[in-house]
Image 1 (cartoon, protein in one colour):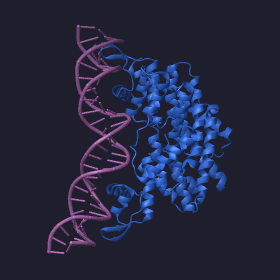
Image 2: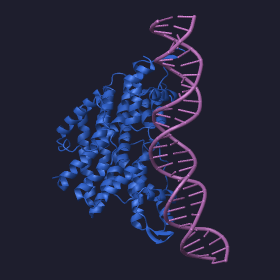
Image 3: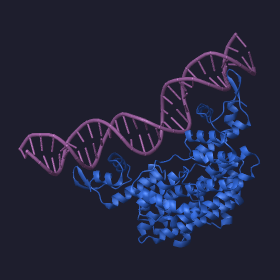
Image 4: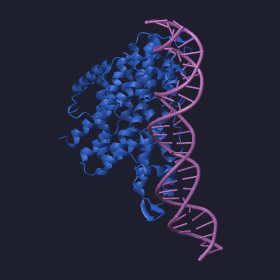
Length: 211
Length: 211
DNA sequence: CATGGTTGGATAGTGCCAGTATCCAAAGGA
DNA sequence: TCCTTTGGATACTGGCACTATCCAACCATG
């Protein structure tokens, strides 16, 4: 199919597709003539994934490029590629060294130990940066977020991971598993947050009288 | 204290504080002379909250203003104000009407029913918009996200809400409860997402052999 | 063979947003 | 008195995700 059709079937403007091509988020089409290129279903699928990562997952274009690049870097083995996406994801907020941050780091360390999550200290996952920063902000505001308070969140995260990886393992092909890992990691995030907010409304109504 | 001291104690530049004052995120200080204003601990606390909402919660400035405004709108009663913050939070992505969205809406409706969350259809919470949009994106990519798949997420969200509201109820004053609701809703979001990603790494290592 | 509309690629421009720099008159300290 | 500091108003900056314009090559039609 030509660019125009790719645009129509994906709902993304041709100008934006050209932009994604320029930015390396999408493989160039097969060149038919000097002024024509052909795209296939794989391009369409990839474009939909990119759109979802950027629009739903609020991911910066540059990060989406990293993630997709890592996901199809065939020099890595399966398990590594599964992690590579995750590793490319967060933009680390360059940990400060103020008092709140030190407290936060201690809480997080204690939490990881209580959860029995090892290997985090040897090769710290990039998700640790934002985690510590967030806990530090809570500390600064005086809210309780020591390991004891974080523990239920950690246990719930572990439950979620089991559910998520089950879905990943349902995918028949290795490439499909990689893509699923990326898509589910990112796209279930707004689902989770939305449900949590809805649950807050429900629980608040239950407790404080929701006539 | 003067603006300079407020800046120093909060770690926010005077220029940025002036910007927040302009944008109505912060009450003006008490005017001492024509060229001097005095700020107190309340300003400092509020400034820290604003910073956290914007930097950690990635909230647009305009939204932060709405949220804070709702939180201190004393014309509303306690339960309403607790919800007001939540209600002001998400920028609805203006639901489309394509096939995937219709499917998504059906799944979400079924989910809410299975969870026993009532009253959502009468006055739809703003969190529903993003939720449907996210599910629609997953549908478009062909991933399973019917009510059955969403249910564990919903139940987990309910668990989280109980934990969160417990912390809110620990706050002694009504105003403190409102602020806690806002702060915890927003600032625990990155905590939850980070922990989920860490859990993915753990679970992936467990399943796919993490030598 | 003309010829007029369409295509894909290169380039420069747009709009938004969060923050920053500059300027100014009035205060306050040495 | 003089010189720095203060708070406020205004205009500017930089980054980012697009988007509009231009252009030569292509293809279908008469």
